[in-house]
Length: 207
Image (cartoon, rainbow, N blue to C red; front, side, top):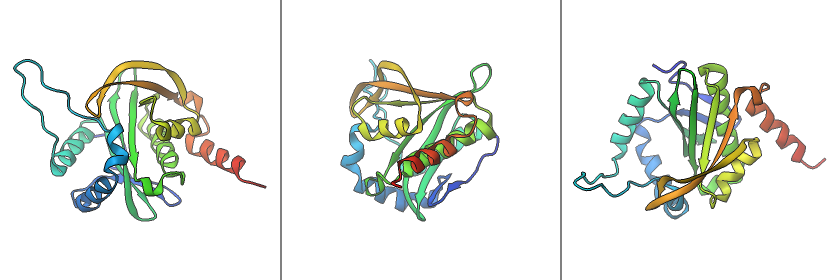
């Protein structure tokens, strides 16, 4: 079992909590409404190799069961994102590795209807602080397609370091796509990432 999992994390109107079977209707509605908004950035299943089976996208119930199993094995923390009490997205800390690495990577998406309101930077900051302060990870990565301006702005607002390009890193929108790597280590945010984000917001407010 993951340390401090399942867990609920909150800051103001933004809340992260484990995904549930009963979220299916709300999750499908948000996905359907944002189909074109999300399609260029969504992971896809590559064609099978010679003689390999044709993979299919899982159903919602299959996805939730898989995420729960990975969380129980300590390899993942899958959250839904709520904003003002409504499901508006998903954030997953995946690829959790212990031993001499102690790292994981964060993936996320959000409803276009709430984009630009600080929901996603807040959600990422909550998750990263939990990873560093409670779970005990040392490094968090976010890998983003160079063309994905909104996602890149999230990590830039939070002060992630850009580390370079991973060519043809993930199968996205039907092809192998390059990704930029952004990272933070626990030593870089001793005050906490959420506190850094709040300070940045305060500096941007007109006086």
